[in-house]
Image (cartoon, rainbow over all chains, first blue to last red; front, side, top):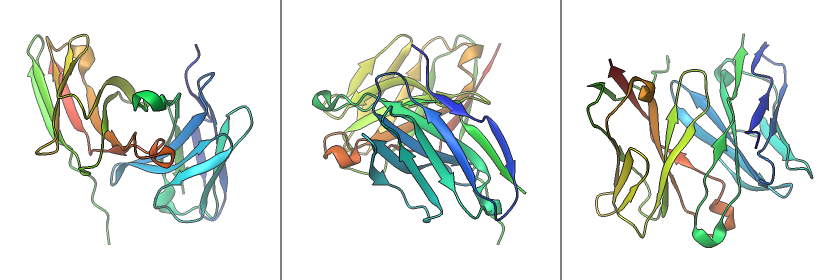
Amino acid sequence: KAGVTQTPRYLIKTRGQQVTLSCSPISGHRSVSWYQQTPGQGLQFLFEYFSETQRNKGNFPGRFSGRQFSNSRSEMNVSTLELGDSALYLCASSNILAGEGKNIQYFGAGTRLSVL
Amino acid sequence: GESVGLHLPTLSVQEGDNSIINCAYSNSASDYFIWYKQESGKGPQFIIDIRSNMDKRQGQRVTVLLNKTVKHLSLQIAATQPGDSAVYFCAENLANAGCTSYGKLTFGQGTILTVHP
């Protein structure tokens, strides 16, 4: 099975621009979560989508948004980029086994965003 | 002001030694825990998980111990190899708190493991 695929791997943007990142989950996985990783804050949860609905959201401003398509692929968008948005953005997919109380999330390699 | 980066704990061991990586988790209601390994330039890779109704779980060369009384997790790696060098993260989840919590993992700050040949 192919793993989680994120595109692009690297992006350079300038302040004020907007950016869209893409994530293709593992086949059959319906939950997609997004995380931001920075040296200062570590790994922080952005939001999670399941069946095209946002089920959970972290403490990020409204400039950060996302969506999920019917094939479970997901995109996240950051508008009006700020220097502090420079980070590694990670996507994870999960085949949540609710009955077993498990939520193993499998991560992609991430998109490295640099805001200049 | 200037932001300060996280100062990750470090653990340096010799090849063949056993390694123990510790993690204090934050939410006493968390009922599911995962250890991840992250190598440079890669996303976190699943190592092992444990539910809160267990206090120990073993995998291949790895063991996770859970102490709910003090909200502490540890990852033991037997016969550590240079390929084990990476940053290790613990993550917690409220897997049984309802579907709205499923997708959110809360990560610890991480520990840098360096294995010397």
